[in-house]
Image (cartoon, rainbow, N blue to C red; front, side, top):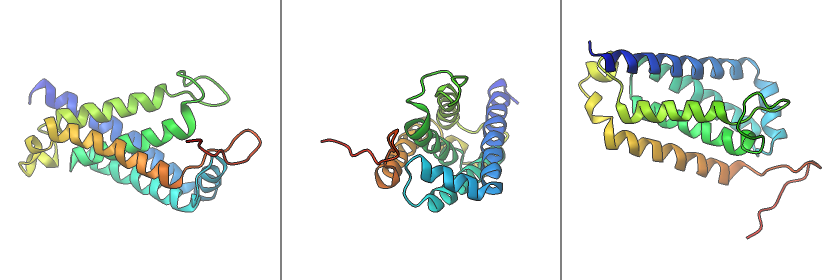
Length: 174
């Protein structure tokens, strides 16, 4: 096994484990998470809970297994872009900027996901066992990164309406 394969496996296991754990946390706290989505400006907060939870659990499992790795990485990137725009960007960079958290964490997870998408799943993966690992890296992986960003933009455009400090929706001026 090459050093790259070990590094890719480590990145996939850590990123997949973090996403899976986050998804399970959301699943266990359905009411709390649904209410939170509504409080930050998402329409159909129950649908947001489901989409977020299913995506986080699904991409976590796929990354750990090394199956459809580029698609799973795109899912992570999509979730992180939504988190950045809806929660973290206005706080600043530092995750320790209490009471809210800055965007250093979501940036790191998105960057790791992009690296995994572009670099590929490595030899210790179901993708490799199926003989498709080299079909899912490079430009295809880069395309997956773009798809993740576009999917996040579509979700935000469809469902996100920021709430101002007085609790009213902010209307975008054009």
